[in-house]
Amino acid sequence: MWQLPFEYHAFAEKWENITTAQLALRHDEVLAVNCFKLHYLLDESVMVDSPRKIVLNRIRSLNPKVKLQMDWLFFGSKDVDILFFALSFEVRQFVALVSH
Amino acid sequence: MSAGYNAPFFMSRYHECMKHFSVMFDAVEGSLPPDDPDRVLLERERFGREILNIVACEGLERVERAESYRQWQSRTQRAGFIQRPLNLAILSQMKAMMGSYHKDFGIGEDGGWILTGWKNHIVHGLSAWEPNPLVTNH
Image 1 (tube, rainbow over the protein chains, first blue to last red):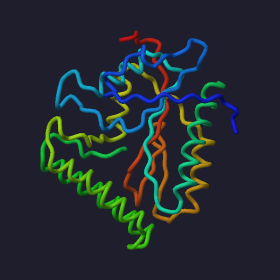
Image 2: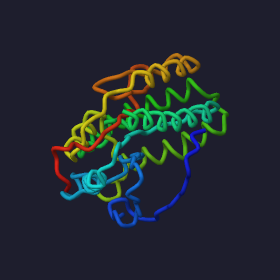
Image 3: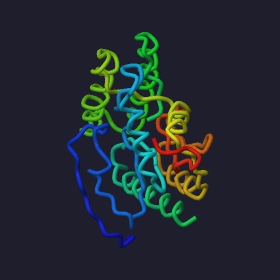
């Protein structure tokens, strides 16, 4: 639909251990970060330098154009609709933001 | 996820967990027949495991740590982001889409967040952020 070139890289790594270098960012790209399931990261009640803080700070240090925070639950037969909508929501929101 | 079941003290965590999952089970009850295999999977494999982790685990072992969207808001601000204004076209599009769902699913807006939930209980929040230029990199 959007005719965007697509590459996929997966990391089997704790989020707080992923380094900027690993992401292999290119300077000609617009960077958008989607935060999904951030609530699985340990917080300050477990350790002062918590993964939750580290990950958010690292995202900030990447200086992204936009960072989305979302989390969604799918229900039964409407799954495909909502999944599609969630994805198109993200893309549209992103397009709306970068086109400002 | 926007919920308060990350409280360090057991009783308040238990109550928040009870409150949140009552809503979740109620929403599933209103949406799917009891013998729906997706429902069984969702209730047992997802909700069941989440509840087990919230109630029975402490410290490093407790990975289910949802906070309210207000807590996420100040946390994200502290990390050096400023919130993008809400795109009202997207909100109204989402509202239109919710019209085909069970009437008790709800959608609303507060402080630039799109909030979705069930019978006035907030379950999820969506928001967009950009780096605050006044905060230097960490």
